[in-house]
Amino acid sequence: MPAAGDYTFTVEKKTADKTQALVNIGEIPLKVYKDGNAPANTGSGGNPESGKKNAESNPASVDTSDIDKIISAGADYITQKGVNDWGGALALSAAGRSVPESFLDSAAQEINGGDVLPTHFAGLIIGIKAAGANPRSFNGQDLIAQLLSSKIGTTGLNGYTYTLLALDSGNYDIPASSSYTREGIVSSILSYQLPNGAFTLAKNTSPDSDMTAIAITALAPYIKESRVKTAVNAAVSYLSKAQQPDGGFLPSYSAKEVDESTAQVIIALSSIGINPKTDTRFIKNGKSAIDALLSFRTSHGAFEHIKSGGADYAATEQSVLALCAYRSLLKSSPRVFDLSGIKSDDTTTIRVENPETGGNVPFAAAAAVISVSLLALLISRKKSV
Image 1: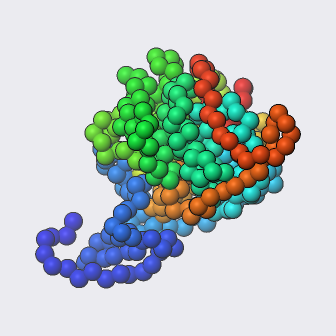
Image 2: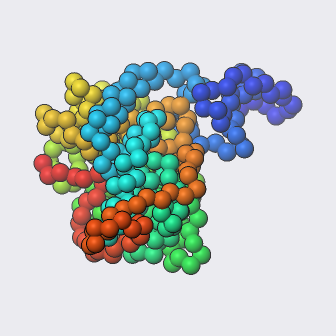
């Protein structure tokens, strides 16, 4: 740090991100952000005890051309197959692509059909926001209020993590009439942590790398809270120990490595400022989590669910999102789940077909309360291996 005193601040250059500029004090570069608010995933602040510098001092100078090409090829695959779920919408948005209108049509149809689990309902909110629509006024409905009127804990840890991600995706206020608060949701997430630092879908069940990663991602905006920092540091320690010899990760339900588990860990680490490619805690036998993820890539740019399993849509969308999260870390851009910078239409009206009458009626969302146990709902479907 420079000594105390008077300094002349000079703007050296504008970065690709118009919300930030590089300012030098003497020879020490400081990033200055619009309105004085830095993106929450900059530097290594997510894990202050690591003592490692994980982001470049000048993010505009970071060469991500190789990553950009891989992301682009994966986004092409998603586009070719069609955006059929909210994970695909989020991945395309993170990749800088437009989300097709057909996604909003299918989202409206799905919610209108009822029986939507709170976890998936929260995911649809994220996808709708990523597509440029307004979840608070989607066909005249406030989807945030509807989500919070359901029993989000019926799907275990995922109900709380994805609800928090949905709320924070657009910095949405919680209605005063709601029984939920952000503080309470954070507390509920923390209650699923085991003594070894791992998180589980249902309390007191087997530790799971996927659940641990998703919990970290959801808690990332709250890392400055002492209780959250302690929990996240323990979770990071668990993931480091759980990493496989080739740099990948196993889900609790499989003895084989799957692409999506490694992708979730990369998203989590990137969200708290830990570089999944260079941080020594996440390099095993010279292989990083990024190396492991890329080992699932096919010659056509898609990703496999398991090795030699062939191109897989869910694996590709999660891998694209993971690489976008990693790129955001390198460039000190907002987290991939932070969609507050996306301009949303004030209202979005979609005509959907009434499944009972066959007629066209305005969409009416209903978040069904369905109790499930040990149902691992990740960003997309999970397949048995």
